[in-house]
Length: 90
Image (cartoon, rainbow, N blue to C red):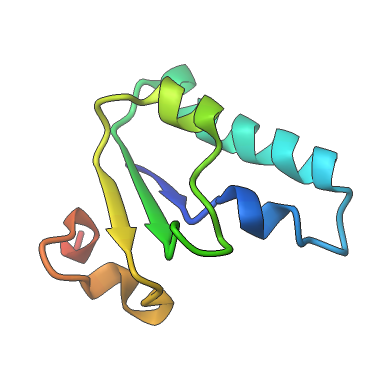
């Protein structure tokens, strides 16, 4: 399973240790791995209606049928969020 965890527009634009364009390109390359290896994808966002913003539209368009877990900012609870496929243990 490929987890696309909170790779949101508002978050990558705030990166100061990477060039924002390079960071964005790396995010899209990470997301493309699901298609390349034909593996299931789960996406998450944290407070997407606030400053974090949504996932980039390119990622959403790559996986229109993938589950998208929209949290309200509970970052430390992402793996135990109620009804989350991420709460499943291997």
